[in-house]
Length: 526
Image 1 (spheres, rainbow, N blue to C red):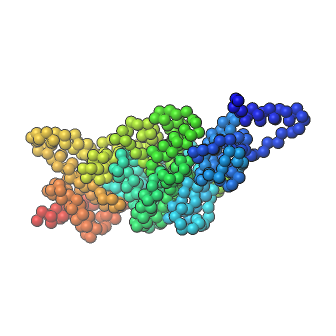
Image 2: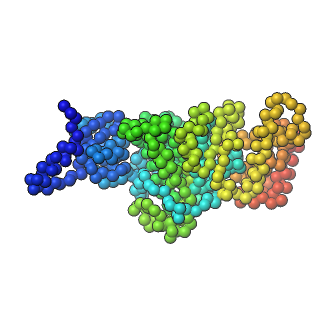
Image 3: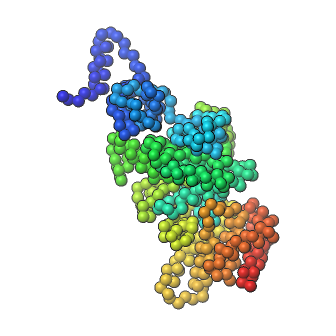
C-alpha cells in the first residue's frame, strides 16, 4: 500500500466539505505523526511560526524549528516519554522567551530561565525577553570607547577589550580558555564595590554538571556571584537546550544593555553549541553541508554575536531601537553595552576548521591560546603574534596605551631572534640585550589562576618591563622581583598608583616607578 500523505487527505476532506456547503473551521490543534530522538513531526498546525512554543496535552513544551508544507518539526525542551503518535499538540501563539530580572544575580538557571541551584524561586520584578531577537541596527550603536579591564596583564596591554566588543578566545582543550573568561568576571568585582557594576552572564553550554558546580564555587569564593548569572545547559540536557542556551544568555544580557547598563557575557563554548545545533538539524532532516554542519550555522553564530553592542548615548534614539520587546517599552536608556567573549575549542591548533573560521570572521579580534606555551609554563598561554584586538586599542587608558605600545614590538622582535639562540650561534651585545629583555617580559606577563590585577598595577609592571628596569635581575627571579616591586609601590607610592588608575602617566609618575624599581633591584642584588 502506498504511503498516505496527511496533507492530501486533509485537502480532499476540505474540498468535500466545501461542496457540501459547510464551513471549514481552522482549529489551532495538531496531532503527532512521528516522534523520536527529541523531535516530533506535528500535522495540523499550518499557522505555526518559527520559534513558537508548541504545548502538548500533558503540558510538555517544544519549539517549532521546521515549517514544512505538510507538518511542523518541533524540538522538545524536556522529557517527552509520555507523548506518542496521535497525541494532541496546540499552538500557544508565544514565541520562545525567558523571564529576566535582577533576581537572577547569584543564581544558576537553565535555558528556560528556571533556577536549578536549589535556592527556590527567582524573586523580584521579571521582564519577558525573547530568546531570539534581531541585533540593534547601525543607527543605535556607537564606537567602542570604554575599556573592559580583564585583570590579565598580557590582554589589557596587547589585546585590549572594550565595552561592547566581541573578542574570541580560541585554543585547544586544556589551554586555559575558561580561566581567562572567569578571571575577567572576577576582575569586575572592583566595579561592583565602587557602585558601577558590570553585570556578568556565564553560559555553560554542553559541560558536565560537576564543572558548572566548580565554576559556581570559584566565582562564589571570589565574591563574583553577587553580579553574575550562570546559564547552564549541561551535556546531559537535550540538544535543543544546549543550542538555545547562548541565546537565552544573550536575552539576559540585553535586559541590562537596553537599560543603559554595562554587561559581559561569556559563551563557553560555541563549538558545543554548533554540535548541538548540527544534531538537531540532522534529526530534522535538514541537508548537511561542510563537516556535516547545516548551511545556516554561520547565520546562527552571526545573529547571536551581533547582539553584543555598545548602544548610542542618546536616550531618545535608543528608545526607538529595532525589534524592541513590548516589555521593555519605556525602560530603555542609552549608553548600555553588552560585551561578548565567545570561546571556541580547536582540534590540534587548527584555526582553519569550519566553526573557528566562521567565528573569527564575525568577532572583533581573537585571543589565541597555544598548548606548547601552556605546557612550557607560560600561563596564560597567549600567542601574541596571532592574537589581535581590532577595537579595544581605542578604549585603552592613555597611560596603558603609552606604556604598552613598545611591548608588542619588543616581544615580536624577541620571538624572531629566539630561533637563532637555539642554534647556539654567537650573538652581538644588541641582540643579546633584546633576548634578555624579551625573556624577562615573558616572565612578567605570566599570571596565576584567579588572580586578576588592578589596572594601575598592570601599568606599573608593564612600564618596568618595557623600560627594562629589571635588567640586573636574573630571569628566574623576575616574578619574585615583580612581587616585591608591587609591595614597594603599595606601601610607599600609593598616590602614584592612584594617579595611574585614572590613566595619567606623567614624568612624575615615571620617576616614582623608576625609584621603586631601583630600590627593589638593589635590595635583591645586595
